Image (cartoon, rainbow, N blue to C red):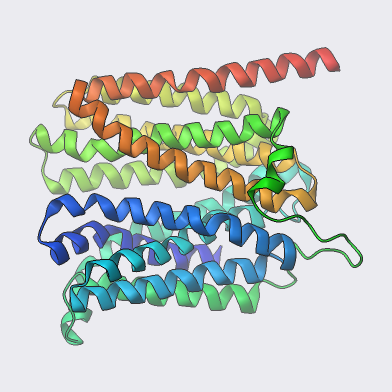
Length: 388
């Protein structure tokens, strides 16, 4: 939890200015979107190597590596801001993605030694810890600019300096305090297989459904969230109102995590997933029909975060519970990879849909994506009932 708070501050601080930083370097707003692309690609690129390292050597070296890679990336991005070198900035943001991979895998580290009945609770508490950094981090832009001015750097490099320090501290805390390692192989245990191919044989039944739930829910959330600021700006919303809406959306994603973990453990993973999908549909209906109503779009985005929280926490809990301990790291890593790719595709396709047919159509498409999840969950429950 402590590492998630510190690392979350670094993530929130850097993410808030990454697009603006590329715009300043290039002089064109067209490059701003590349920030999200590079960050997502970086997270995806680190996911499987970190999972393989965890399976081979434990969570502590894997998470430490991810956080320190993020620190290096933030430092390179600061250098790029000072020298106005675009390739260097893109490289820095790619390495920055290592922190996102570490952040995601930290929630699974919480479940390595959890009792089966408490997997959801353990996972959700670590996810909840991200709330603190996610809310405070973006508000460090002003202090970051002051620090940058003091050391002779561009204003937007200041928040990236905070990211570099936050990630470095998270890496050190992980290396020093994560003892005993929650995922050290027993003496004499066989060396686990490595890479994506090793995860594929496990992608069946309950495990495959859980991966689909997480990836699909993330795609729905990213697609709608990514185009909401554009929709609000087109209807005359101020930057302050847009910022408040996104903050409430993030609060919806993380603040209720412990409740979702408790529901997953006590009420059932399947029921919590179905609740999450239902909330996503309601969110899409509210946001998609909002027009120029700033209150309605804010409610819709908050519900979108809550639906994501229920679906992803229960889905990740189901994934963990469906696997033997020795198989978890690589399959969990594959799930995170699928989640990142789905989010990237959701964001990219969302822009095309809105350009062609509008924000309302985007929300209809997002709601439709919940149907396969519901079908898979209900079919799995029917098979389980027949088997028992």
